[in-house]
Image (cartoon, rainbow, N blue to C red; front, side, top):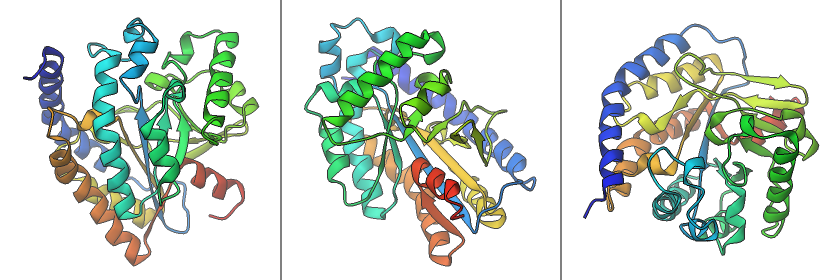
Length: 296
């Protein structure tokens, strides 16, 4: 039986699907204007926001953290969805040999996390970045609170021998960048949106903003995305796709169908461009490192 929260999610997804093609068309026309930054070839990046990662986290927080996670889905429900979706995503990208950035919420380290274990054991060197600790909006945190969250992330990730270098802000609200530098981060993803998306990387202080280009989660008929990838190849610029695992979820059992219908066409086309030498795949961290070392 589909829950009320899932019904709301389905209706929201159907609404976003109607907006998908106009959004893609706008992005295509906007990106078709010759971008300024050029590498030796186009770059495709993917970052995936892991908001919860496990339903157990809801039990740890005694069901009191819902407001920090989602407008109408509980922390437990998001955790359940991500437990189903993320292993499939890891398998999908591993089979295609595409490295991506998984921005993982720090509190997941309080559990025996299958997600982190799968990422650490993956045959592909994925970028395991951070996505806050409690998934609280950084613009609402004091400097002391933000520092505490970053400290908890470092301690928790260290248990899995992970040192995150990429940061994706919860709810895309950017704050306390100077603290990111202090904790050893190299790059972050800035806030995107229809009028804010772009195909570029810029440096802010010592950090690189690996700027978002397109929220793939609302795209269920990727009719123009191959054309945008062609723009990235032509002008040798970065095309940064991002989404949440829950964006691929409609109802139980539908995840693989969505991966086949949405992700497969996009990344299969990009792999063809890679074979031609016009596109390479990077993670947020690997791209920032190469830029800093002037390897691009």
